[in-house]
Image (tube, rainbow, N blue to C red):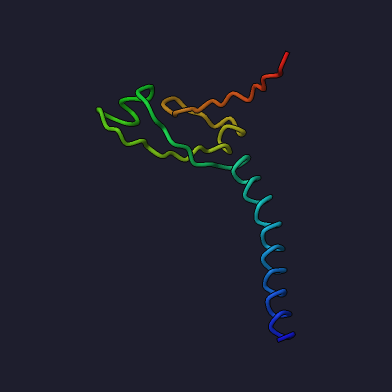
Length: 88
């Protein structure tokens, strides 16, 4: 019985070690390299969501190209407002 508890603790400890490594790596990747976004609405028609479809498109946002100024004519650029509203 004591050996089974030690066996379970070993896997829980390994899980938490992996978790505390994977979360910062994933967050850094999504912030600095690329992330997935959903495009909804008529603002990007006819390039994305063509016609009157009710299905949203999923796109990969490449942060790396923007940081290296590799934007070319015809590329779709997504802007995100990072403005924080403060209470008065």
